[in-house]
Length: 370
Image 1 (cartoon, rainbow, N blue to C red):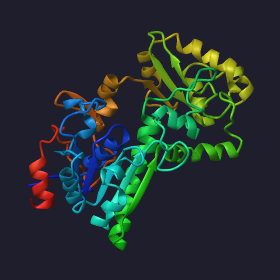
Image 2 (tube, rainbow, N blue to C red; image 1 turned 180 degrees about the horizontal axis):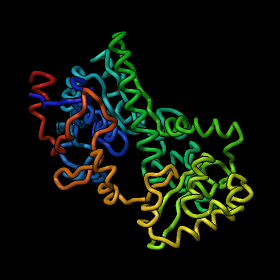
Image 3 (cartoon, one colour; image 1 turned 90 degrees about the vertical axis):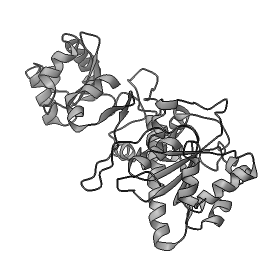
Protein backbone atom coordinates (compact mmCIF):
# COMPACT_ATOMS: atom_id res chain seq x y z
CA UNK A 1 0.00 0.00 0.00
CA UNK A 2 1.18 3.50 -0.80
CA UNK A 3 1.69 5.90 2.10
CA UNK A 4 -1.50 7.61 3.26
CA UNK A 5 -1.29 11.21 2.14
CA UNK A 6 -3.24 14.42 2.47
CA UNK A 7 -3.03 17.78 0.76
CA UNK A 8 -4.15 19.32 -2.53
CA UNK A 9 -1.81 17.15 -4.64
CA UNK A 10 -2.98 13.85 -3.19
CA UNK A 11 -3.12 11.26 -6.00
CA UNK A 12 -0.33 12.89 -8.04
CA UNK A 13 2.67 10.69 -8.82
CA UNK A 14 6.09 12.29 -9.27
CA UNK A 15 9.26 10.39 -10.18
CA UNK A 16 12.49 12.12 -9.12
CA UNK A 17 15.97 11.11 -10.25
CA UNK A 18 18.17 11.69 -7.20
CA UNK A 19 20.47 14.69 -7.46
CA UNK A 20 21.63 17.80 -5.65
CA UNK A 21 20.26 21.27 -5.09
CA UNK A 22 17.01 22.61 -6.47
CA UNK A 23 15.58 19.40 -7.99
CA UNK A 24 15.21 17.62 -4.61
CA UNK A 25 13.71 20.76 -3.10
CA UNK A 26 11.09 20.84 -5.84
CA UNK A 27 10.25 17.20 -5.10
CA UNK A 28 9.98 17.99 -1.38
CA UNK A 29 7.60 20.86 -2.07
CA UNK A 30 5.31 18.59 -4.11
CA UNK A 31 5.53 15.85 -1.47
CA UNK A 32 4.68 18.41 1.24
CA UNK A 33 1.49 19.18 -0.67
CA UNK A 34 0.45 15.54 -0.85
CA UNK A 35 2.04 14.12 -4.02
CA UNK A 36 3.49 10.60 -3.97
CA UNK A 37 7.12 11.42 -4.81
CA UNK A 38 9.42 8.48 -5.51
CA UNK A 39 13.17 9.13 -5.58
CA UNK A 40 15.36 6.93 -7.78
CA UNK A 41 18.50 6.60 -5.65
CA UNK A 42 21.81 4.93 -6.45
CA UNK A 43 22.48 1.59 -4.81
CA UNK A 44 25.17 3.35 -2.75
CA UNK A 45 26.26 6.96 -2.32
CA UNK A 46 28.74 8.20 -4.93
CA UNK A 47 31.89 10.27 -4.20
CA UNK A 48 30.10 13.57 -4.89
CA UNK A 49 26.82 12.67 -3.16
CA UNK A 50 25.96 14.65 -0.05
CA UNK A 51 24.55 11.80 2.04
CA UNK A 52 22.88 13.63 4.95
CA UNK A 53 20.88 10.70 6.31
CA UNK A 54 18.15 11.88 8.66
CA UNK A 55 19.20 15.48 8.04
CA UNK A 56 18.23 15.33 4.32
CA UNK A 57 15.15 17.49 4.83
CA UNK A 58 14.60 17.81 1.08
CA UNK A 59 13.81 14.08 1.01
CA UNK A 60 11.10 14.21 3.65
CA UNK A 61 7.79 12.64 2.71
CA UNK A 62 9.26 10.86 -0.32
CA UNK A 63 9.76 7.17 -0.99
CA UNK A 64 13.11 5.79 -2.10
CA UNK A 65 13.87 3.08 -4.62
CA UNK A 66 17.49 2.04 -5.22
CA UNK A 67 18.38 1.32 -8.86
CA UNK A 68 21.61 0.76 -10.80
CA UNK A 69 21.23 2.95 -13.88
CA UNK A 70 24.48 1.62 -15.35
CA UNK A 71 22.67 -1.61 -16.26
CA UNK A 72 19.77 -1.95 -18.67
CA UNK A 73 17.70 -3.76 -16.07
CA UNK A 74 17.83 -0.67 -13.85
CA UNK A 75 16.94 1.62 -16.76
CA UNK A 76 13.99 -0.60 -17.63
CA UNK A 77 12.79 -0.45 -14.03
CA UNK A 78 12.76 3.35 -14.19
CA UNK A 79 10.90 3.28 -17.51
CA UNK A 80 8.21 1.08 -15.97
CA UNK A 81 7.82 3.70 -13.24
CA UNK A 82 7.67 6.40 -15.92
CA UNK A 83 4.63 4.67 -17.38
CA UNK A 84 2.77 5.18 -14.10
CA UNK A 85 3.68 8.75 -13.12
CA UNK A 86 2.32 12.18 -13.93
CA UNK A 87 5.65 13.98 -13.97
CA UNK A 88 9.38 13.37 -13.73
CA UNK A 89 12.14 15.52 -12.21
CA UNK A 90 15.80 15.38 -13.21
CA UNK A 91 18.62 17.79 -12.42
CA UNK A 92 21.49 16.40 -14.47
CA UNK A 93 23.77 18.32 -16.82
CA UNK A 94 22.26 18.46 -20.34
CA UNK A 95 22.75 15.19 -22.20
CA UNK A 96 23.31 12.93 -19.17
CA UNK A 97 19.78 11.54 -19.11
CA UNK A 98 19.95 10.86 -22.85
CA UNK A 99 23.18 8.89 -22.38
CA UNK A 100 21.51 6.84 -19.65
CA UNK A 101 18.68 5.94 -22.01
CA UNK A 102 16.17 8.02 -20.03
CA UNK A 103 15.93 11.16 -22.14
CA UNK A 104 12.63 12.89 -22.91
CA UNK A 105 12.04 11.14 -26.23
CA UNK A 106 12.36 7.69 -24.66
CA UNK A 107 10.25 8.54 -21.63
CA UNK A 108 7.50 10.31 -23.58
CA UNK A 109 7.31 7.32 -25.89
CA UNK A 110 6.52 5.18 -22.83
CA UNK A 111 4.09 7.74 -21.37
CA UNK A 112 2.75 10.32 -23.87
CA UNK A 113 1.12 12.33 -21.06
CA UNK A 114 4.34 12.63 -19.05
CA UNK A 115 5.58 16.04 -17.95
CA UNK A 116 9.37 15.78 -18.07
CA UNK A 117 10.89 18.39 -15.74
CA UNK A 118 14.52 19.41 -16.31
CA UNK A 119 16.30 21.48 -13.66
CA UNK A 120 19.60 23.17 -14.55
CA UNK A 121 21.44 26.39 -13.84
CA UNK A 122 22.17 27.58 -17.39
CA UNK A 123 19.37 25.78 -19.27
CA UNK A 124 19.29 23.00 -21.84
CA UNK A 125 20.93 25.09 -24.59
CA UNK A 126 23.13 28.15 -24.97
CA UNK A 127 26.90 28.76 -24.86
CA UNK A 128 27.13 27.96 -21.13
CA UNK A 129 24.82 24.94 -21.07
CA UNK A 130 27.63 22.43 -20.44
CA UNK A 131 29.58 24.54 -17.93
CA UNK A 132 29.59 23.80 -14.21
CA UNK A 133 28.14 26.43 -11.92
CA UNK A 134 26.29 27.14 -8.69
CA UNK A 135 23.57 29.43 -7.37
CA UNK A 136 25.89 32.42 -7.01
CA UNK A 137 27.09 32.15 -10.63
CA UNK A 138 23.61 31.85 -12.12
CA UNK A 139 22.16 34.87 -10.33
CA UNK A 140 25.31 36.87 -11.03
CA UNK A 141 24.79 36.37 -14.76
CA UNK A 142 21.02 36.95 -14.74
CA UNK A 143 21.35 40.28 -12.94
CA UNK A 144 19.55 39.08 -9.80
CA UNK A 145 22.68 39.48 -7.64
CA UNK A 146 23.39 43.08 -8.59
CA UNK A 147 21.32 44.92 -5.95
CA UNK A 148 22.03 42.41 -3.18
CA UNK A 149 24.21 43.81 -0.43
CA UNK A 150 25.07 47.15 1.06
CA UNK A 151 26.47 49.99 -1.08
CA UNK A 152 30.23 49.85 -1.34
CA UNK A 153 30.35 46.17 -0.40
CA UNK A 154 30.64 43.22 -2.76
CA UNK A 155 27.21 41.84 -3.76
CA UNK A 156 26.16 39.00 -1.46
CA UNK A 157 23.02 36.88 -1.56
CA UNK A 158 21.54 34.43 0.98
CA UNK A 159 23.00 31.03 -0.05
CA UNK A 160 20.83 29.13 -2.52
CA UNK A 161 17.65 31.14 -1.93
CA UNK A 162 17.51 33.54 -4.88
CA UNK A 163 18.85 31.09 -7.46
CA UNK A 164 18.48 27.42 -6.56
CA UNK A 165 15.19 27.76 -4.70
CA UNK A 166 13.56 30.96 -5.94
CA UNK A 167 14.64 30.91 -9.57
CA UNK A 168 14.92 27.13 -9.82
CA UNK A 169 12.80 24.89 -7.59
CA UNK A 170 9.74 27.10 -7.45
CA UNK A 171 9.69 27.71 -11.21
CA UNK A 172 10.08 23.99 -11.88
CA UNK A 173 7.18 23.22 -9.52
CA UNK A 174 4.93 25.76 -11.26
CA UNK A 175 6.01 24.41 -14.66
CA UNK A 176 5.27 20.82 -13.68
CA UNK A 177 1.82 21.61 -12.30
CA UNK A 178 0.95 23.75 -15.32
CA UNK A 179 2.13 20.96 -17.62
CA UNK A 180 0.09 18.35 -15.75
CA UNK A 181 -3.05 20.48 -16.06
CA UNK A 182 -2.47 20.83 -19.79
CA UNK A 183 -1.75 17.13 -20.21
CA UNK A 184 -4.99 16.22 -18.46
CA UNK A 185 -6.89 18.50 -20.82
CA UNK A 186 -5.10 17.52 -24.04
CA UNK A 187 -3.56 14.11 -23.39
CA UNK A 188 -0.21 15.48 -24.48
CA UNK A 189 2.91 15.60 -22.32
CA UNK A 190 5.90 17.87 -22.78
CA UNK A 191 9.32 18.91 -21.49
CA UNK A 192 9.68 21.69 -18.89
CA UNK A 193 13.08 23.40 -19.18
CA UNK A 194 13.51 25.15 -15.81
CA UNK A 195 16.78 27.11 -15.80
CA UNK A 196 17.86 29.17 -12.81
CA UNK A 197 19.08 31.97 -15.06
CA UNK A 198 15.59 32.18 -16.56
CA UNK A 199 13.71 32.04 -13.27
CA UNK A 200 15.95 34.46 -11.40
CA UNK A 201 15.71 36.91 -14.31
CA UNK A 202 11.92 36.57 -14.34
CA UNK A 203 11.83 37.43 -10.63
CA UNK A 204 13.41 40.79 -11.51
CA UNK A 205 10.35 42.05 -13.39
CA UNK A 206 9.16 44.17 -10.46
CA UNK A 207 12.62 45.73 -10.23
CA UNK A 208 12.79 46.15 -14.00
CA UNK A 209 9.53 48.09 -13.89
CA UNK A 210 10.93 50.33 -11.16
CA UNK A 211 14.13 50.77 -13.16
CA UNK A 212 12.17 51.81 -16.23
CA UNK A 213 10.28 54.32 -14.09
CA UNK A 214 13.57 55.78 -12.81
CA UNK A 215 13.21 54.36 -9.27
CA UNK A 216 16.06 51.83 -9.56
CA UNK A 217 19.48 52.49 -11.10
CA UNK A 218 22.50 50.53 -12.24
CA UNK A 219 24.57 52.36 -9.65
CA UNK A 220 24.20 50.56 -6.34
CA UNK A 221 23.18 52.50 -3.26
CA UNK A 222 21.13 55.23 -4.95
CA UNK A 223 17.90 53.37 -5.67
CA UNK A 224 14.59 53.09 -3.87
CA UNK A 225 15.28 49.72 -2.23
CA UNK A 226 19.05 49.63 -1.80
CA UNK A 227 20.12 53.15 -0.82
CA UNK A 228 17.77 54.84 1.67
CA UNK A 229 18.47 54.84 5.38
CA UNK A 230 14.88 53.75 5.95
CA UNK A 231 15.38 50.45 4.07
CA UNK A 232 18.42 48.95 5.75
CA UNK A 233 19.66 46.66 8.49
CA UNK A 234 21.41 48.11 11.53
CA UNK A 235 23.66 46.83 14.30
CA UNK A 236 22.45 47.23 17.87
CA UNK A 237 24.26 47.71 21.19
CA UNK A 238 24.43 43.94 21.80
CA UNK A 239 25.92 43.21 18.37
CA UNK A 240 22.64 41.87 17.01
CA UNK A 241 20.76 43.37 14.09
CA UNK A 242 17.38 44.86 13.21
CA UNK A 243 15.71 45.76 9.92
CA UNK A 244 13.67 48.81 8.99
CA UNK A 245 11.72 49.10 5.75
CA UNK A 246 9.61 52.23 6.11
CA UNK A 247 9.24 52.90 2.39
CA UNK A 248 5.97 54.83 2.35
CA UNK A 249 6.00 58.38 3.82
CA UNK A 250 3.37 57.61 6.49
CA UNK A 251 5.37 54.64 7.74
CA UNK A 252 8.59 56.67 7.70
CA UNK A 253 6.88 59.40 9.71
CA UNK A 254 5.77 56.88 12.33
CA UNK A 255 9.28 55.40 12.49
CA UNK A 256 10.75 58.83 13.20
CA UNK A 257 8.15 59.43 15.92
CA UNK A 258 8.90 56.12 17.59
CA UNK A 259 12.68 56.59 17.64
CA UNK A 260 12.55 60.23 18.72
CA UNK A 261 13.46 61.98 15.47
CA UNK A 262 10.09 63.43 14.39
CA UNK A 263 11.23 67.02 15.04
CA UNK A 264 14.66 66.67 13.43
CA UNK A 265 14.64 68.81 10.24
CA UNK A 266 17.35 66.73 8.58
CA UNK A 267 15.34 63.52 8.83
CA UNK A 268 12.20 65.30 7.65
CA UNK A 269 13.91 65.39 4.23
CA UNK A 270 14.45 61.66 4.32
CA UNK A 271 13.23 60.99 0.79
CA UNK A 272 15.92 63.19 -0.76
CA UNK A 273 18.59 60.79 -2.17
CA UNK A 274 21.30 63.39 -1.63
CA UNK A 275 20.71 63.13 2.13
CA UNK A 276 20.71 59.31 2.37
CA UNK A 277 24.41 58.73 3.20
CA UNK A 278 24.37 61.23 6.07
CA UNK A 279 21.01 60.05 7.40
CA UNK A 280 22.17 56.44 7.23
CA UNK A 281 25.05 57.35 9.53
CA UNK A 282 22.57 59.02 11.89
CA UNK A 283 20.35 55.94 12.01
CA UNK A 284 23.39 53.70 12.51
CA UNK A 285 24.54 55.76 15.51
CA UNK A 286 21.06 55.82 17.02
CA UNK A 287 20.36 52.10 16.69
CA UNK A 288 23.69 51.35 18.37
CA UNK A 289 22.39 52.96 21.57
CA UNK A 290 19.97 50.13 22.46
CA UNK A 291 19.91 46.36 22.30
CA UNK A 292 17.90 44.47 19.72
CA UNK A 293 15.36 43.44 22.35
CA UNK A 294 14.92 47.05 23.43
CA UNK A 295 14.22 48.11 19.84
CA UNK A 296 11.80 45.19 19.49
CA UNK A 297 9.91 46.34 22.57
CA UNK A 298 9.55 49.80 21.02
CA UNK A 299 8.91 49.00 17.36
CA UNK A 300 7.80 45.41 16.76
CA UNK A 301 4.14 45.08 15.81
CA UNK A 302 3.78 48.75 14.79
CA UNK A 303 3.43 50.20 11.29
CA UNK A 304 7.05 51.41 11.42
CA UNK A 305 7.90 48.38 9.20
CA UNK A 306 10.35 46.81 11.59
CA UNK A 307 11.62 43.30 12.35
CA UNK A 308 14.58 41.86 14.22
CA UNK A 309 17.14 39.94 12.16
CA UNK A 310 16.92 36.43 13.64
CA UNK A 311 19.06 33.36 13.19
CA UNK A 312 17.25 30.10 12.43
CA UNK A 313 16.94 28.93 16.03
CA UNK A 314 15.68 32.35 17.13
CA UNK A 315 13.18 32.39 14.28
CA UNK A 316 11.77 29.03 15.35
CA UNK A 317 11.15 30.46 18.84
CA UNK A 318 9.59 33.77 17.79
CA UNK A 319 6.01 34.05 19.13
CA UNK A 320 4.51 34.95 15.75
CA UNK A 321 6.07 31.98 13.99
CA UNK A 322 5.29 29.69 16.93
CA UNK A 323 1.60 30.62 16.84
CA UNK A 324 1.47 30.02 13.08
CA UNK A 325 3.37 26.75 13.40
CA UNK A 326 5.98 27.76 10.84
CA UNK A 327 8.76 25.54 12.22
CA UNK A 328 8.88 22.16 13.89
CA UNK A 329 11.47 19.58 14.91
CA UNK A 330 11.07 16.14 13.38
CA UNK A 331 13.42 13.44 14.64
CA UNK A 332 15.47 16.22 16.20
CA UNK A 333 15.90 18.16 12.92
CA UNK A 334 14.60 21.74 12.70
CA UNK A 335 12.37 22.08 9.62
CA UNK A 336 9.96 24.58 8.15
CA UNK A 337 6.47 23.13 7.79
CA UNK A 338 4.66 22.93 4.42
CA UNK A 339 3.60 26.17 2.75
CA UNK A 340 1.33 27.66 1.53
CA UNK A 341 -1.73 26.84 3.63
CA UNK A 342 -5.09 25.57 2.46
CA UNK A 343 -8.50 25.93 4.09
CA UNK A 344 -9.76 22.47 3.06
CA UNK A 345 -6.89 20.25 1.88
CA UNK A 346 -4.24 21.22 4.42
CA UNK A 347 -1.22 18.88 4.21
CA UNK A 348 -0.33 16.70 7.16
CA UNK A 349 2.87 17.01 9.16
CA UNK A 350 5.75 16.02 6.84
CA UNK A 351 6.52 12.32 6.78
CA UNK A 352 9.87 10.82 7.70
CA UNK A 353 13.04 11.06 5.61
CA UNK A 354 13.50 7.70 3.85
CA UNK A 355 16.54 5.47 4.00
CA UNK A 356 18.11 4.81 0.60
CA UNK A 357 16.14 2.10 -1.19
CA UNK A 358 13.80 1.33 1.69
CA UNK A 359 10.66 1.48 -0.47
CA UNK A 360 11.86 -0.43 -3.54
CA UNK A 361 9.47 -3.34 -3.21
CA UNK A 362 6.50 -1.22 -2.15
CA UNK A 363 6.92 1.28 -5.00
CA UNK A 364 7.19 -1.41 -7.66
CA UNK A 365 4.10 -3.05 -6.24
CA UNK A 366 2.07 0.15 -5.93
CA UNK A 367 3.04 1.75 -9.24
CA UNK A 368 3.79 -1.22 -11.46
CA UNK A 369 1.95 -4.15 -9.90
CA UNK A 370 5.23 -6.06 -9.65
